[in-house]
Amino acid sequence: MPLFKVSESRLKYDDILELDSCFSVCHINYGNSPVFNKIDGKTIATKSRKNSLSYIEKVNDVIGNLYEFDGTEKNYKNSDRISLWKAYWFEYINAFDNLIVSLPKSIVTVYIGRHAIEIGLKYLLLKNTGQVVKEHDLGKLSELLYSKYNIKDSYMKDVDKFCELYCKYIEGENVEYFRYPEYKNNSFFAGNSLDINWIAYNFMLVILKLIHFAGLDDEI
Image (tube, rainbow, N blue to C red):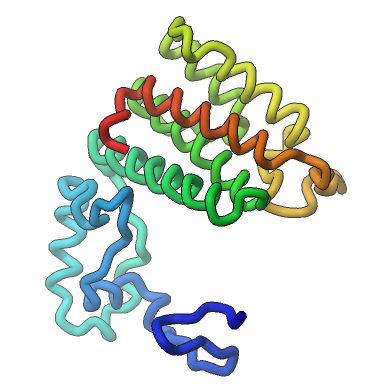
């Protein structure tokens, strides 16, 4: 089956690259935006982006201003940061949910599920502390979460322990596990006998528990 079929046509290796797609400003012309959990990305964090967007929308000569905007923005309001993190979290959960059906035994499915947990933990910590924790280890993130929220809910029992054990004894403390076949200190992928279904099942449970803890059951 041919790769990357688009509509009725198929991309070929000798097709011409569209270099204008490398510039954020050019994308304004198309009026498109990413979708997060079925929500148009343009409607997220609008208060913080108001000044930046008003500038971009006034650009008449796009070609002459390609280098004026690099696609990043700063100084988001805290409420908008929380909204953006929640949107990212939900979209990774959606991707994981779809991959469980389409690629149930794939290492990619596990990696996306793991990333959904990481974003969820960071989202909850951001809501509590106002800061994004620069840490990728799920065990350390969950430990911090439990300390900040003083979690006693019975349904959250062992979530922190699962994250700690997973990171130590499956990932071997390599946060890039499943993303690459090779890791730091000449360590290589050793998961050829892992039960992907078992991992995905437990990831689903962790995500459901975090969603409920965040009070977002009705939004996802």
